[in-house]
Length: 253
Image (cartoon, rainbow, N blue to C red):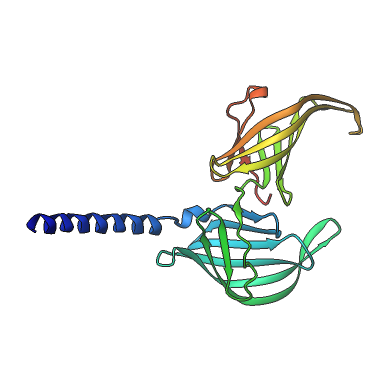
C-alpha cells in the first residue's frame, strides 16, 4: 500500500512538471519580435507591415484586391497576458490609384482597435475589433524586403506584386553598358531568405539612352537575399561568385 502511494505521488509530480512545461511552451509561443515583418494573404488580398517604433509598434494593413481598397493604420503594444499585439488609435482610409500612383481619399474612421496574434501555423491573425475586416484571412510571413537597396553603383529595387516579389538589379559596367537582372522571388520564412529566379541581360545604350543591344547572359538565375540587420541586405549569387554583398535600404523607398 505504501509503495502504491509513493508511486502515485511520483506520478502526480511528473504530471505537474509536464503540465507546467506544456503551459510554458504555450505562453512562450510568440513575443513582440516575432511580429516584426511584412505579412500577406494572397487569396484575399491583404498585406500588413509591422515595424518597430518608439514606444511600441506601427502597423499598416492594406487591401489590394477588389474595390474600394482600404488602408488601416494602428499603434500597438505587446500584451504578454494575451500573447498578442494590442492596437489602438486605428484609422481606416480609402486608397485611390490614379495616374499610376497611390494616394489616400476619404477617412472612414479614426477610432479603430484590433488585436494581432500568431496561430499554430505561425500565420498572422488580425482581429479587427471595429468591423471584423480581417476575419478568416490569416497572413503568412513574407519578410521585409520592399524598397530600393544600393551597394556602390549597384541598385536593387524590390516590390511586392500580390503573389511574390519582383526584383530588378542594375549593375552599370560603363556609361553606355549595364548588366540587369529581372527576378521573381518567393520568401522562405523558415530560413528567412528571399529566393529569386529569372534572367540576367547585358544592355548597351546609345548617347540618347536608347537600347541598341540586349544579350541574355543567364536564363536560370538563382539568387538569395537575406536581411543581415535592420536596413541592410545581403545578395548571394553562386553564378556570379557572390557570397556576400551588403546593400543598404534607401530612405523613403
